[in-house]
Length: 449
Image (tube, rainbow, N blue to C red; front, side, top):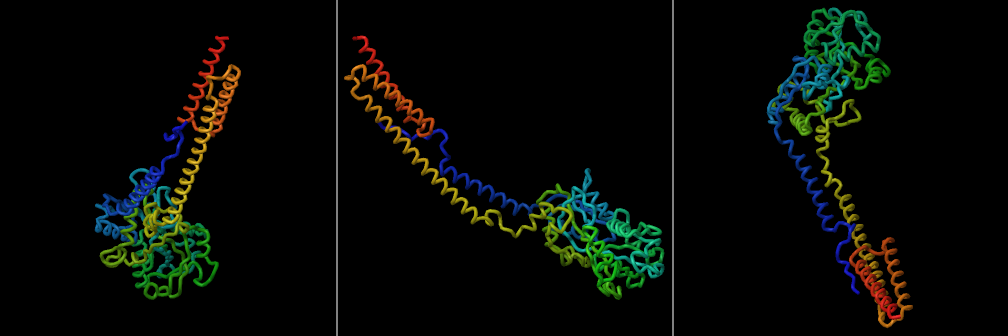
């Protein structure tokens, strides 16, 4: 008897065309995602607020230049510049729970706000320790600031925070702590009302150049330039974000007359961590694409903009990079499907090979199960043949043989040597019909007797 096994049984695997279609759909969706990411940065954004620094400082000049570039490239419809006292205040503004600023210029050694994420390192800011030529006689080292009138920077500035940490580290107590802006500090050094000052600035600093031109200042070193293990090395070792730095001879007109060993910190541009990723990427792209020239951030005289370089090294910074900035730095990397094309192709080939092997194994098992069903059906036919001519004893023997055959078929079903499909149903129905026929014949023979 022919068994029908064409119908798909319960638990059968997904057909091959459906699997291939699903893989193609995943590839199309992923490709669309990468295409969107690559072109979405062209869209214009609305508003941006940047915390800079004192209006006379480099941070403010850079913020104004960045505003000009972002608005000029139609990347943002409007950019506001917020003048502040510097890094400490800027970190507070980035970390504010209410109305935080979007971007801020900060020093690498500033205590990072949890809400701050790095967009880029800009340039090195060099610590200048200056003594007035009028009132700073006898100030030749950092330890000579003990008991003197010292301008340590404006409240909320990174300069003041760095100066405070250095003096505390060396156990120095100044005589008078003067809270002055950079411009006020320069006037005080020139007229002698300030004996010494800390000024943190990119090199060259226009303000320091003007004081050097007028012979209003002397440079105070943190040790000897070519000597290992001095004060500058100690600060570099103790404080994360601080690096040793040498101001070359004659950097400012004819000053200093000898190389000056000091320290530097990196100036950074940070963003609030919830700033849109595409927005952050657009800012970094605009900054690096418009550094030089009158139409760029350099303008006519912002030479420090030329110092800005792409330097992506997460291991060297104390603030995590913003995902949008990371996307920009990885822009040259091929999309995932391009970079891993060979691996994906091999994986797909292996997957199809395994699938094909599975299909072949499944068909072999089905053929084997069908052959087993056919063998059962053949035995039923043999046991059912000639029943009308058999005496009661032989009918009972056939009855026992058929019941044993039915139990064996169920045992094979449980052991998964047979499928619970249409062929198995036909076998069971055939067994049931033959057993009923034997019961009927036995009943008639018994009645006659």
